[in-house]
Length: 232
Image (cartoon, rainbow, N blue to C red):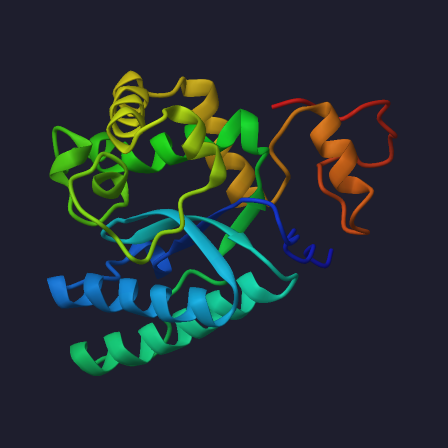
């Protein structure tokens, strides 16, 4: 069975995962992390993609981004992926693939999942046992949103402005939100939806998406019609 094309639509936030081949490390030094962030910055601007959040782990990375065009996100990821592989292979004296196939991604419902997705990403290094607190990990967007640093790579989503009337208030609310964490159900839904490429949101959100694309946005049981979408 031919695999489905990626579900990509302009104006919606997308959760993106790119893994190293066979879970191998994709960073060997601080300079490597810095290079990937520089490539993301350059190509997000070039292809009209607003990057809201990120976390770079040892063998994979997550992004949360909204493209302004239908092909902006694939173009950005292709450009970043190719240039980073050339850079990394040259630095390490290696050849061949670095990525585990194509990147994985899906659309998420803003009101229901955007902040949960950001918290999910910020807590990734904590879950992996790399740090005790998100603030201690240097390769995520968490520091920007709690006022510890300014990251020019990021374009805060409009939903962030609703967290408070001042920067200090928004930073405090966001820190508390991440501290509270997400449920195992949310964590599993965010991971599975991105890896499988199915839209993540409530019934109305999914139905509205389906009107905007010929590509199926949700898994259905083979040979059996379903009366309504499954809600994550």
